[in-house]
Length: 611
Image 1 (cartoon, rainbow, N blue to C red):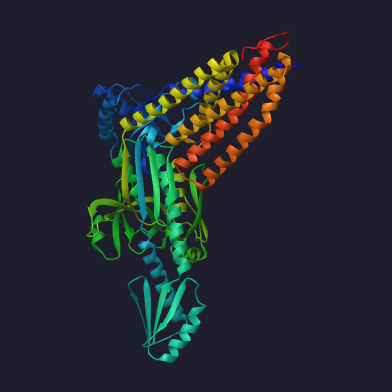
Image 2: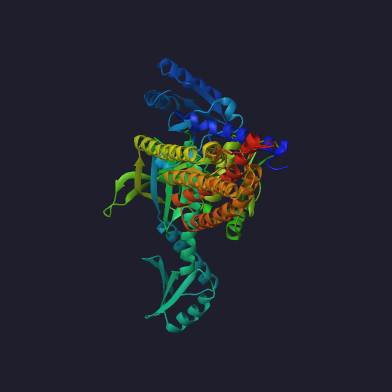
């Protein structure tokens, strides 16, 4: 029968529209100013600290909308930014320096919607406000480490070869010079060293001198790995700020872009981002006394609890020998970190632990933070901060695989595993550029974007209703449904962020959807002019327009895929919203309008259409 849909199609369309409205609704509730309290390096906010925070806020008469504790973190919501800022100062005095107190904006989605995983769209910097950082990765420190490793390799090699009368010294530009007594020994060493290590580039010079540089391939790999590891670390660090909708990506050879939408506490963000984490394994000296710290062999370091522990200055092993680390549960149902070393690290650790069973080994976290000072070239100077994050007994000889136990909780274990896995080869970073987009500008951008959508919709509705009457009104309903579906899909999809170019993509897809309905209506009118009955005209109009609409959308989709593949940032955002809009417009313009028309005209004898 012409122009009739079975019941299951109507049920399917109603379900799609219902879910679309359900997951689009959170975008109407806005955001609350909030404060998030999280522990640094795996610390968990416990019930006692939560109660202290609540009591302090009540004592200072700071009214909050809600304070919840979840997964070892506290999130307090407030009605306005004035209360938010006042609460931050109160909470900072309560929690001290071992916890992060970050200003943030969190969705004001009702709990019943949040239980359904319904959240508002993630907004970019231009719509939400926030901060943009351009970070430079300083690989000079890694080059120094590589030079030191090559220096030790060469010493070991010549000692094994029992070579005498040579002098090895370091020079500038990460080069090592080897001076020989005579030319014959220089030539023999040159031939032997050429195949000794692919990481070394060896050149022969006058006066029986060999110059050893780091190979170009090794330099390129070190720099690429350093940037990639820093990207991984920064992505995990920004989660400490309570920010999941962040952008961390590579820019050029040595730069990283970090965008933090909605962040208000830029000083705290800079402090966390610019800290550089590295690890060393050191032997603990007993008996431990802070008075012994003047010795050249050992020094006092602090644990997170503030206790002083004497460590030998010479490291057993540095973090650059760690290949992987993971978290598991030991036989006492306590968290532990499993560590895998490379071959050189495994040999070093095995030899050391075999001779030191029963002694204590500490894991030392070393961070380089921005000191606030600058050198003669205008670059920020970094300060070195050290803290013990784990102390454990050596119960048996270690090899390439060993475990670190005695960790307080699973979150601390995961954090330690992350630092060991991805923080080993990290190099210092400098924030070279900072751009802040204030909330006022973001509000203006949102208003302009919404105005553009509203004016475009009103113009399309007026034109469609005047031109096509009832069919135009049906097309208008489909247009509004299309907009709702776009918003709901963008709210559901992880990693999709709406920006100003994204709003342009939404407007473009609405135009595409209108074009589809115009094609359908014009084909129906054409069939009527050719003398077909109304029911046949409707059926033939939709059938005839389908191929043209499909071809137009496919060509647009091809362009969108190219934009997403070639472009970056806001261009990709435009491509994503346009692609989503193409899919939803096909559904609403073909199936949605046809369903409404079938309800109105289907199974009826009609002589005239309102078109």
